[in-house]
Length: 372
Image (cartoon, rainbow, N blue to C red; front, side, top):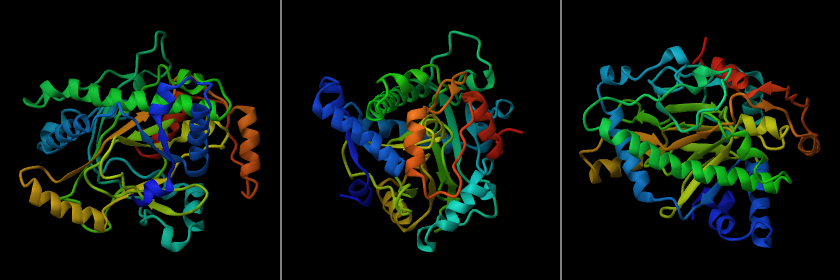
């Protein structure tokens, strides 16, 4: 087994889905999920419903999409709505941490051998991304229409026909899994089962595959996505074909290279800023980066030999699960108390003000240069 699967707890969704909520096994699994997010900000999920074949079909399509000429990709850009649907091209999004004091403090307090690659130049990330909305439109007028815009379908022949069915199929697999993890986490935190899931009922969830051209940006120690946390509630990833994702466990200060077990129906879940706010900091958003390392380069070599006709593009199969834009984020008092007890060593407690989710998202988008 890999470093990650030895370090991060593996949560078995099959147990949760096949036994009554009151059963000892389900309660234990739910406690394990909540504790994993509190301790590490991340966990691995085993879900028998997830198909490796669906992930492969999805990765192939996204590789083909990003292998298109840039003029074709530019047709799918929507900067006027802060790139919240369609494509974001390379060198657009900036890592917030490079200019964020609390984040720079976190880096400074890590052992030098455990620090992320240096982002102090505040250069934009060389990654591209496509956002495909997977949420149900709210049955009321939202205050945040730009965050709830209709999808963009690429028009190139050979891609257009496959796009919606492939995105929807893989997106549904990850959405189902992450919503079950939201339920398990709520139970493990002592909240009603539906508490987190209901708060995200009309969230602008995004299937957001990230693409990095390894022919263009494939040098050792290239930062593909600088050290950051995610702004949403929970992020779930399928298996990528190329390693390079590092995460930092909250309570250890250790950099953990993400390596999925070589086969099997596994997904990775990470905590984002919205669940941090909701739990008053009991669960912290997990820091991570994507870089080109030795393992990435070895995989490039193997992949070039085994699939010489395929584009050398690293796709991260990622789904961002959001709370509803008009939902009011207020920390649960009983969780804030637990958080304060856990964070007694911190110089100053973070204050989580009452705020609408849509406003919180817009604040974060300004930090990463996607919104003026």
